[in-house]
Image (tube, rainbow over all chains, first blue to last red; front, side):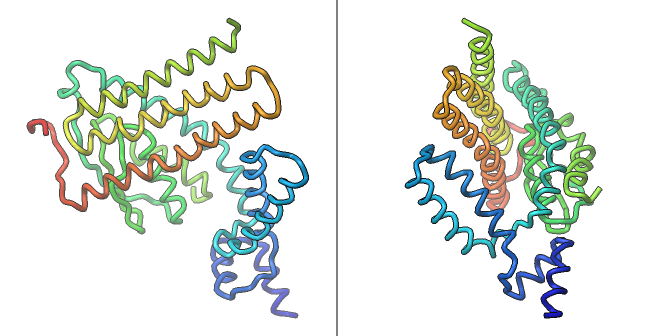
Length: 189
Length: 110
């Protein structure tokens, strides 16, 4: 009984470390993750099926429940962690889209420029990122690749980045502001 | 021709502009790595704009079915945004593993 209470309390903090401990103990007492997975999947089911009669809805409930129960161990989103991530992500997305549009215009300008070969100057940039969690590193790497002019070539788990930049101007802002914003989005700032 | 049609047309044509830029860029850029820049990413913004245009146009006669179809179209954009950078990264990584050196200024076109 004592042990259960302790674990229940530990789950309140919902840090990734606590999650890992939970997973290793193989316990299935907490239904929060299963419910989150279920509702996300059921939302997708409703959008994709588009049928609201009881037959199709109940089929969705049954299959979502089975999949959520089986795969909750793999995904394990925690309710609070998910909400915190969502709140932090909202300011990051519009900024990312703005950067994507700016950088796209730059690459389009390069593509249609008659003397394109003189303008581009491909190079590989190496830098070390301060980000720690793997999810933050992956997000940062994908954000670099999404903004044109730069492609992430390699990331080491310690945060060593190798980035291919199409010209000097594309590579210069790295890591800079984008890293700071990703760090803020994942609460590492 | 109301205001909605104009918005849809502007979005659609700017999307087409970026998609054309991607295709031209693949032909014009000098080597494997630099070709991936327009190939993997101008397409991302191009499809974002074009898909938004389709979703808006689809909502012209508003109904629940139309709304669901628009949501499905927007789901395509979400998946492209997840898959495109990952695929680009995979191709670049394959090139690096195979030992292809990137083109630098002053070399001949490949």
